[in-house]
Image (cartoon, rainbow, N blue to C red; front, side, top):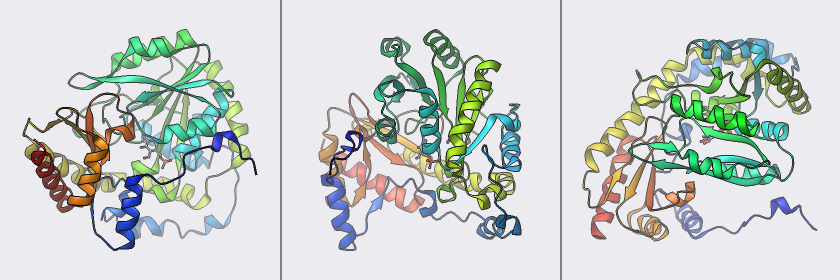
Length: 391
Ligand SMILES: Cc1ncc(COP(=O)(O)O)c(C=O)c1O
């Protein structure tokens, strides 16, 4: 059988995956500081309240609507209204996941061989989304200067006639920085000149460490054709419920045309299940409860790390504004792969290396802030001890 070239991925498990599989077989416990699945992190979620919403007779009626049920889209519009952003439900499309939303947008904007530019470092799923949509990989660097910022000179160098969209992750995974006002203005200029769209992945938007800080959502951006993505996997910590959304904004004509074409794409799949759409208004209204619980854990773990990882001979904790991760930049040129393996085999701690997120220079460890604080703090203690041994 000759399979499609786009699926020619390296499928043999790497060394780390092999070690993890052996651990699992032998029942060996590890401290997993890569855990990013909130449903495995011991949150209470006010479960009954959430699940009760699924027991309505309305769920026995199938109302296939291209953009999703109006009541769910109104609830999403209210979510943005809460940030003082006026969005009409007509500008919103529901999808089963953010990854699916990306695919809809790539099918809308790009032909095979075109390029979409992604930030680097960022989230590794983009590689597969590029392959599955027959796109060419394109990255623009973020540089660290007390905080991560877009390197606009380099971004300019990567733009070609084939560039159909620039993706921002706001705040980025794993660097945790939000796009600032000046950066949005620059991105608008670049996109206008290159006649390409902006896609802003804002799944972590509600998780700023400083709850009083104000950050900008691209959902309000009318300067340029802009697609803003959000979803329940992070907003409510419910990835299993499979509901995300796209907000379309921009100059009226362009926006109308994009909505018309997206309607056909969404109508072809109608992939969002009815029970979750019906539950969405009440679930979104209860988001402070879930978000407070998650933020409390994230902030406690963050404070632990900032207080305890202070030996500058080992490395530093990089600045982040929000999200579920923190980054340790290690001193010197530590071999990330070797270190990850040692941490796993000798200390039973699992962390992600920088290369997993496409970091270019230097050595990094990426720590999830979601695990139970007992697990997180013990993991940090073991990482610190391992790094000290290597001095
Ligand atoms: C930045 C970012 N966008 C999108 C996703 C995928 O979200 P979904 O579960 O809605 O596909 C993730 C998952 O971790 C993510 O980190």
